[in-house]
Amino acid sequence: MTSLGYEKPTDPARSALMRRVRQTGTKAEDDVAAILRQSGLRFRRNVKSLPGSPDFANKTQHWAIFVNGCFWHRHQGCGRTTTPTRNRDFWLAKFAANVKRDKIKTRLLRALGFRVVTIWECETRTPTKVRRRLKALMR
Ligand SMILES: [Zn+2]
Image 1 (spheres, rainbow, N blue to C red):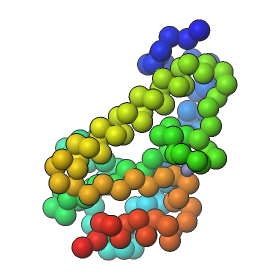
Image 2 (cartoon, rainbow, N blue to C red):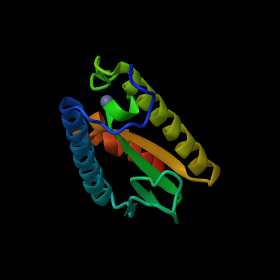
Image 3 (cartoon, protein in one colour):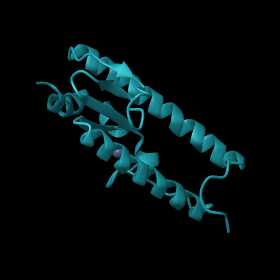
Image 4 (cartoon, protein in one colour):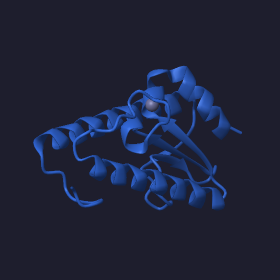
Protein backbone atom coordinates (compact mmCIF):
# COMPACT_ATOMS: atom_id res chain seq x y z
CA MET A 1 0.00 0.00 0.00
CA THR A 2 1.52 3.29 -0.98
CA SER A 3 0.88 6.47 0.91
CA LEU A 4 -1.31 8.95 -0.86
CA GLY A 5 0.06 11.71 -2.92
CA TYR A 6 3.30 13.41 -3.14
CA GLU A 7 6.13 10.98 -2.68
CA LYS A 8 9.01 11.16 -5.13
CA PRO A 9 9.07 8.42 -7.71
CA THR A 10 11.61 5.82 -6.75
CA ASP A 11 11.22 2.78 -8.92
CA PRO A 12 12.99 2.95 -12.28
CA ALA A 13 9.95 2.07 -14.37
CA ARG A 14 7.96 4.90 -12.90
CA SER A 15 10.81 7.37 -13.30
CA ALA A 16 11.22 6.39 -16.93
CA LEU A 17 7.51 6.81 -17.53
CA MET A 18 7.48 10.26 -15.94
CA ARG A 19 10.44 11.35 -18.04
CA ARG A 20 8.87 10.12 -21.24
CA VAL A 21 5.54 11.79 -20.55
CA ARG A 22 7.17 15.09 -19.62
CA GLN A 23 9.17 15.22 -22.86
CA THR A 24 6.06 14.66 -24.93
CA GLY A 25 4.43 17.60 -23.14
CA THR A 26 7.26 19.91 -24.09
CA LYS A 27 7.04 18.93 -27.73
CA ALA A 28 3.30 19.52 -27.72
CA GLU A 29 3.91 23.03 -26.34
CA ASP A 30 6.41 23.79 -29.07
CA ASP A 31 3.89 22.69 -31.69
CA VAL A 32 1.26 24.98 -30.22
CA ALA A 33 3.76 27.87 -30.10
CA ALA A 34 4.40 27.43 -33.82
CA ILE A 35 0.68 27.45 -34.62
CA LEU A 36 0.14 30.55 -32.46
CA ARG A 37 2.90 32.34 -34.35
CA GLN A 38 1.41 31.33 -37.71
CA SER A 39 -1.98 32.57 -36.55
CA GLY A 40 -0.47 35.94 -35.70
CA LEU A 41 -1.40 35.66 -32.04
CA ARG A 42 1.05 37.34 -29.71
CA PHE A 43 1.85 35.57 -26.50
CA ARG A 44 4.18 34.92 -23.63
CA ARG A 45 5.11 31.48 -22.43
CA ASN A 46 4.84 30.13 -18.87
CA VAL A 47 3.20 33.23 -17.51
CA LYS A 48 3.95 32.96 -13.80
CA SER A 49 2.15 36.18 -12.92
CA LEU A 50 -1.21 34.55 -13.73
CA PRO A 51 -3.02 31.83 -11.75
CA GLY A 52 -1.73 28.40 -12.69
CA SER A 53 1.15 29.79 -14.81
CA PRO A 54 -0.56 29.25 -18.18
CA ASP A 55 1.65 27.75 -20.89
CA PHE A 56 0.69 30.66 -23.15
CA ALA A 57 -1.08 33.90 -22.38
CA ASN A 58 -1.71 37.42 -23.55
CA LYS A 59 -2.60 39.62 -20.61
CA THR A 60 -3.71 42.57 -22.72
CA GLN A 61 -6.08 40.46 -24.79
CA HIS A 62 -7.11 38.44 -21.75
CA TRP A 63 -6.60 34.93 -22.93
CA ALA A 64 -4.67 31.95 -21.63
CA ILE A 65 -3.86 28.51 -22.98
CA PHE A 66 -2.95 25.34 -21.19
CA VAL A 67 -1.38 22.52 -23.16
CA ASN A 68 -2.22 19.43 -21.17
CA GLY A 69 -0.63 16.02 -21.38
CA CYS A 70 -3.44 13.51 -21.84
CA PHE A 71 -1.98 11.07 -19.34
CA TRP A 72 -1.31 13.51 -16.51
CA HIS A 73 -4.38 15.65 -16.91
CA ARG A 74 -6.79 12.81 -17.78
CA HIS A 75 -8.10 13.59 -21.23
CA GLN A 76 -11.47 11.86 -21.14
CA GLY A 77 -12.05 9.20 -23.76
CA CYS A 78 -8.44 9.43 -24.95
CA GLY A 79 -6.31 6.35 -25.54
CA ARG A 80 -3.37 7.96 -23.75
CA THR A 81 -5.34 8.28 -20.54
CA THR A 82 -4.17 5.00 -19.07
CA THR A 83 -3.74 4.12 -15.41
CA PRO A 84 -0.66 2.12 -14.41
CA THR A 85 -1.56 -1.03 -12.52
CA ARG A 86 1.44 -0.82 -10.23
CA ASN A 87 1.09 1.64 -7.35
CA ARG A 88 -2.46 2.32 -8.41
CA ASP A 89 -3.32 4.32 -5.30
CA PHE A 90 -0.37 6.64 -5.89
CA TRP A 91 -1.46 7.31 -9.45
CA LEU A 92 -5.14 7.77 -8.70
CA ALA A 93 -4.38 10.31 -5.97
CA LYS A 94 -1.95 12.13 -8.22
CA PHE A 95 -4.38 12.28 -11.15
CA ALA A 96 -7.24 13.47 -8.91
CA ALA A 97 -5.02 16.27 -7.58
CA ASN A 98 -4.02 17.31 -11.12
CA VAL A 99 -7.61 17.44 -12.36
CA LYS A 100 -8.71 19.43 -9.32
CA ARG A 101 -5.83 21.89 -9.77
CA ASP A 102 -6.71 22.33 -13.46
CA LYS A 103 -10.30 23.22 -12.58
CA ILE A 104 -9.18 25.76 -10.01
CA LYS A 105 -6.71 27.41 -12.42
CA THR A 106 -9.38 27.80 -15.08
CA ARG A 107 -11.92 29.16 -12.62
CA LEU A 108 -9.46 31.75 -11.26
CA LEU A 109 -8.51 32.93 -14.73
CA ARG A 110 -12.13 33.20 -15.86
CA ALA A 111 -12.87 35.21 -12.72
CA LEU A 112 -10.18 37.64 -13.92
CA GLY A 113 -11.96 37.95 -17.26
CA PHE A 114 -9.69 35.62 -19.24
CA ARG A 115 -10.80 33.32 -22.02
CA VAL A 116 -9.19 29.98 -21.29
CA VAL A 117 -8.50 27.26 -23.83
CA THR A 118 -7.17 23.83 -22.99
CA ILE A 119 -5.38 22.03 -25.78
CA TRP A 120 -4.74 18.34 -25.34
CA GLU A 121 -1.42 16.85 -26.27
CA CYS A 122 -3.04 14.40 -28.73
CA GLU A 123 -4.73 17.30 -30.53
CA THR A 124 -1.42 18.96 -31.30
CA ARG A 125 -0.86 16.29 -33.95
CA THR A 126 -3.69 17.84 -35.93
CA PRO A 127 -2.89 21.53 -36.46
CA THR A 128 -6.32 22.23 -37.98
CA LYS A 129 -7.91 21.11 -34.72
CA VAL A 130 -5.65 23.41 -32.73
CA ARG A 131 -6.37 26.33 -35.05
CA ARG A 132 -10.08 25.79 -34.65
CA ARG A 133 -9.70 25.99 -30.86
CA LEU A 134 -7.62 29.14 -31.12
CA LYS A 135 -10.40 30.93 -32.99
CA ALA A 136 -12.11 31.37 -29.62
CA LEU A 137 -9.22 33.64 -28.66
CA MET A 138 -9.28 35.85 -31.74
CA ARG A 139 -11.45 38.91 -31.71
ZN1 LIG B 1 -5.76 12.99 -25.63
